[in-house]
Length: 215
Image 1 (tube, one colour):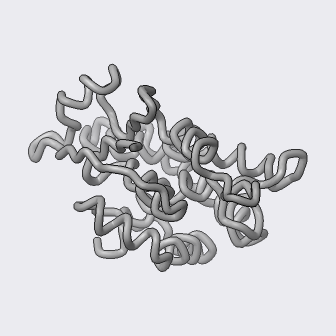
Image 2: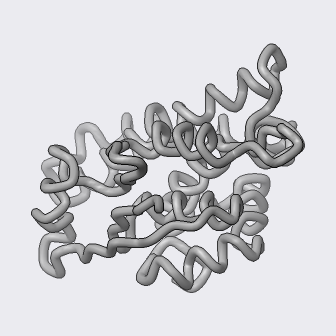
């Protein structure tokens, strides 16, 4: 049985969505953020030294980092009885290149300026000198996402792939903070994900999640 160490209001929600789409059996070990600091509880460090979520356990192995978890799950559970690879384009195609790109882009280029905006927001006026640079970087990311989604239904072409499971969180986070105004394709992508039955099931199982359609 695969175990998901799931933290409320975190990126691990998208792992639950992936597992629901695949129809994979799994169990959730739930953790709650500290009500005052919003930090993950210390118990997570007993699972992985970083003390963050998501983390999964399967067959005696511990896997951390969302992108790595997506790759692991698709390798382990993402092939049907006919040998069809689910949520992964054929290698040697542009769709495969885009799939790999956006799988890493989500936690690389996309999340960094969003996190900088969040953390520097605690500094008040002291952060004013670097706020224009951060806002410019956020705009670059969202402009790029919009451009990509205008060209394709999903981030790696016309079919849902592992890249989309990783990309939903940055865009949900941006939307929750009012940053998707004027980004029609990005908003349509988020709504398209929210409308999927598997996403809804994942929300029901995952608990508190401020970035979803009920926030």
